[in-house]
Length: 197
Image (spheres, rainbow, N blue to C red):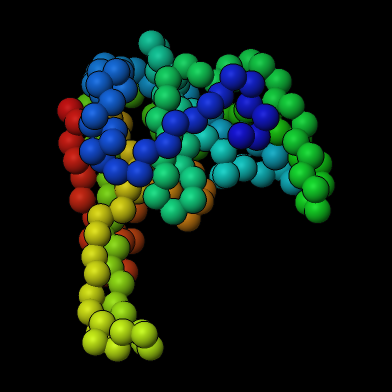
């Protein structure tokens, strides 16, 4: 992915998959009271902008947590797999061109959270609901509602504020405070958090 050396994301699509990964759970729980040093994002040099299709790296004094959201509900969580000091290879995509990236500090994030102590961490999901409108093969299904919880991202609370790293339809986005929850509520979408610590 993006020619990041040695990075091989393992995708999770449910909270249960994450909870069943014992080593990952232990690493996540070890973040409690960790001190944040910096947030790192991939920067597109040609367009001079954040490449939100790439992972977000949360660097603490002990570890680097890597969060990568993909497709609709896929999320990869890893530790210390990405070396920011190592140059990213030039990426060439047929029909799209050549892309050159580098890792940069996410300035507004680092300004707010540098030195913050992590107090709690939760997995976020949002309620996804569909209604059958016009099933010609099975008209008795019309009007039936289906609902489920979709893996969204990680919510981290610190002594300097909170933030969510979440899936914004195939992008890894970061939102400060309770803004994500407020926007979902405003749009009539349910949000729930499974607390890890």
